[in-house]
Length: 528
Image (tube, rainbow, N blue to C red; front, side, top):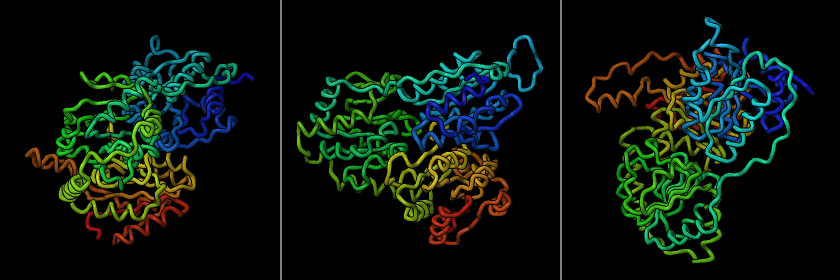
C-alpha cells in the first residue's frame, strides 16, 4: 500500500519492533506524524527536544532496544544534540529521525535554516546521513538497527527533506535477520582460559559491556580465584558478597597500587575512560586481556597483551563452561581480609570527602526494591553513591558518564518508566541539574507515571565550588536562587514532599512508587 514516506517510516519502524517514539511535532515534520497512530506506535510528547532525546536514551537503556525520537529541522535537532552526544559516549542505541530543508544552497533566510544540519549531527553521532528518496531512507533505518544489534551501540541521525516526506512511497521490505555481535573463536577462547589459569593473581575489570553476563561473572571469578573491580556502568555484575570484590572504586587513586599487584588483568567491555579512572593510567604492570566489540579500544593494547574482538557476554559464558573442564574452584589468589580492609578504607574516604551523603544513600538503598531502575544526574549525591552502593542487579543504574551533561536524569527516567510500566523507576538529581529539564515534569504528569524524583538540594553548585577552592580560586557563580521546588511540583500537578528524617524519606519514596503521578522529594544535606 502506498503512503507518504513520512508515514511509511513509522510503519517500517513498527515492523522492526519499535513501540514508542519520543518527540515534538512541528510545521516541518508533520508528515512524520501522519502514520504514527496508524502504525500502532505510542508517541510521547516531550516539552523540549533535548528531553525527547534523553527519554529515548532512558528507554533504550531500560529495554536494550532502539530509542527513537522524531525531531524538527534546525533548532529541533540542535536542541537534541546534547542527548545524542550523551548516547554516543555511553554506547546507547538512540535513533534520531528529522526533517530537513529541501534546498539550502540556492535559498537563504528559510525557517530553521542551518548551513549544514547533517554535518552538525555528525559531530555527536556515529553517523548522520540524508535520505532524499524512500529506498535510501529504508536502507538507513536498517543500517541503524542492524548496527545496534551487531556492534557498539551509538546514536545515529537520519534526515529526510520535507518534500520527500510528503511523496507517496511503497512500503519497506520485510527485515532480514540481523547479524549478532562478534564472538571469539575456539582458539582465542583457549588462549584466554590458558592465560587466566596460568596467572597467580588475576584481576578482572567488568564494564557496562559485560552486564548481560552478570549471572555467570561471579562463577568465573570463583573458578579462577581472581579479584575483581567493576566500572560504574558495570555495578551489579559481581555479587556484592564475593570476598575478592573491590567494588566500583576504580577511581580511587589507591586502586592503581592494587592493580599493580596483579600478574594478569582481564578487562571486559570497558573503555577504562577518564570517567572510569580519573587518572591517565590503570596502574597495572602485567599483561592485559582486553575484550571489546569496539576495535578502537583494542588498538590501545600493548606488546604482550591479548586483544579479543568479541562480545564480553558470550566470552564469559564460554569461559564458565570451559574452565570447569580444566580445573575445579581454585584457592583464592588474593587475601580476602586485605580486600575487605581496602574497601572499608575507600568507603571512609568517600564519607570524609562528601559528608552526609553516604548515610542518606544507604537509607535510600534500604528502601528500594531490588528491581528498581535508577537514573541519576551530575550531582554529588550520585558521585558518592556510585562508589559505595553495590547494586543487586546489573544494568539498573544509569548515569550520564561520558558526555557528563546536566539535566539527564528526569527525562531519561521518564523514558525508563514508559518502558517499565508497573516496575519501580527512580530519578536522582541535584537542585541545579533539575532546572535544566524541569519542564519534562509536565510529560511525567501527563503520562501518570509513578515516578519518585529525589532532588538533592544543597543550594549551590557544590562540586564546582569545591573545585574552585582546590584550585585556590575564590568561589564565584556557584550559588543560584532556587525556586520553591514543592510549589513548582504542585503547579505541574505532581506530588511534593520534603521529608524531615531519613525514615520519612524512605516512606516517601515507597509511597511514590504507587502514586498516580510523579512525586518530587526534596532532600537537603541536613536531613538525619
